[in-house]
Length: 317
Ligand SMILES: [Zn+2]
Image 1: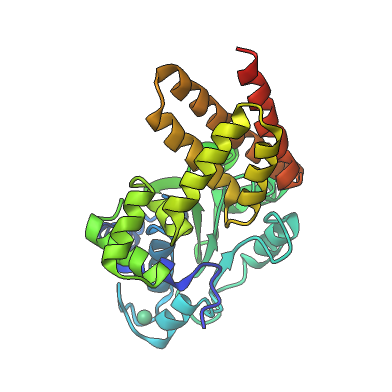
Image 2 (image 1 turned 90 degrees about the vertical axis):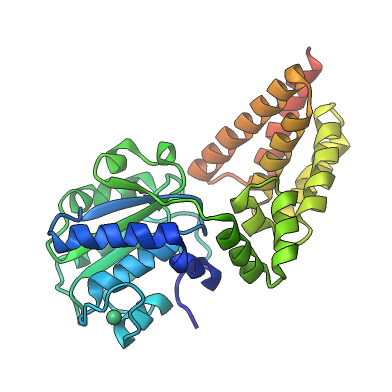
């Protein structure tokens, strides 16, 4: 059983061509003594960045210097998330953010030499704020700026614009390459336990958005179509439709993201003026969601408020 904070399918992308190429490049730098101590791996969740982080960590820690794909017990334990020299930091259960206490633990521990491997590696499952608490980020700055010789930090991000500038300036960014279509389809099939043909339909249903297809899974297309209908009614200032949109979103994993995706789909189909309104609505939703997480507000009431505000704005035209 994996102790990592991600589904096991996230590591399947270790075999992707782009991921292997980037890993090889990092290892060349490491061999030359010029791999930066703090790296930001930039890419959508589940589409290569976690696999790259784990394979890089395994190789940096491996005493056999087995290189990529090494099958020694140390590398295997890194891939299962149970190696004492590799720690993946994530939001703890029942919490909404990566806390200052977690940051203090890292700072207090970082001087400790490796327990058994060549190095110690910390992987931050997201360095966006939120979920990385702003005070926790400040507590980490000095360590990220100059990690001890034996420590490496791998910070995962989908969008550096959502990372505090103080963190951005202390990390070297590596953009994780997009997968090829075949690679992506076999990942979707693995993640959702379906055939490659079905995965291709899902990807079409998500209009080519790989991250959405990965998270949305079976029934994504009909879910989005249902949300589109509800949202169209909701934005026509139909109060009941607003509540039904929110109730539907609540039952879905990453429901607010799916409402955003439905708004983008509506924009793609609308005429120019309406498209602009849908895009503005999607932007308002992103801003409200960021603020919500920062202020620990309740997701449902924020979604109701945002949709109602957009609907009132539309009615005024
Ligand atoms: Zn190994």
